[in-house]
Image 1 (cartoon, rainbow, N blue to C red):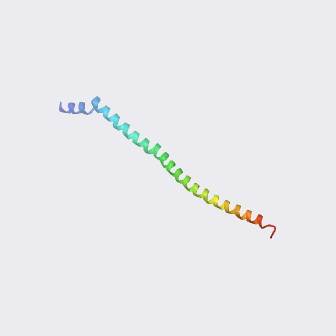
Image 2: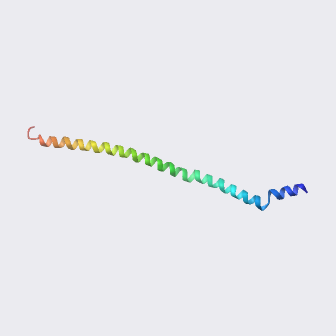
Image 3: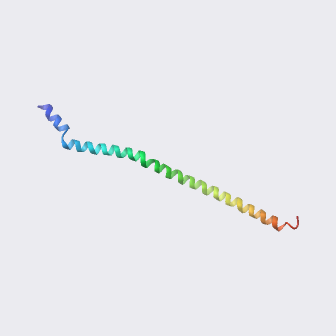
Length: 81
């Protein structure tokens, strides 16, 4: 008789509801790790790449302005050469 009470307590409807919630939380955690985490890491890497490209862009901009300055000086002194 004691065994029947224990099995009834373990497999009652209330216990199955908690099992469903626990399994749902485990599956949801796996989904978070598998689907959302890579998206967040991609977003952070793209932000870093954007910052690097802005640095390169400013460097190229200064080089182009230096080339324009040299070109204007050569044109100004072309007759003397």
